Image 1 (cartoon, each protein chain N blue to C red):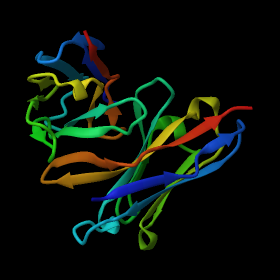
Image 2: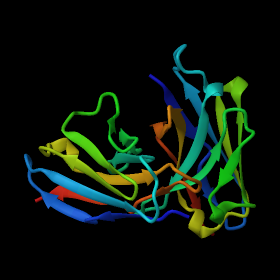
Image 3: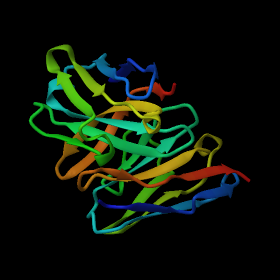
Image 4: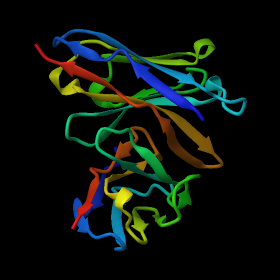
Length: 125
Length: 107
């Protein structure tokens, strides 16, 4: 069973920075981290889900939701089966639980699975 | 951007009830739609992908249908563990967008 584990969340002041990590563990020979695109999704307290960013398996395609463009940077290290989200110029509205998830694509179908347990980012003075 | 709407926003139901949730996309997305279940304090869990494909391990009482702009998630006989919030998501084009969620609670 594949597990994704996020880390790096915490309390940060407005305008500050934070780097989130997501590490894949317990993958079997059928799952190679480097073979999959990955995504970040966030959820503000009491709110719904919001997709934040996507990175292809080789990092050659990257996308962001408009609200974080120019402030957040997604990256990955396939050798370490790790995904990252660098967050700069943080705002109160970035306060959320951040989830990483594997992007699956097969024969014209796509879905996010599995998901990590999430890491909470709180932006407050 | 593609906007996703869901109805109802909440539904009160009893164990054994049939529950149907509707999801609508602001433009056609083919079958590029997924459904997730989320319980309080937990990560979302994939139920349905490609509008109607049941994820491995998900009980068969869950089913999805639709294509284009209109989709439904049906729980044929609600079980105690199904009380949760359900989200649809379009994976047709960036930015991927989720519906606002439908909360299913106990009547």
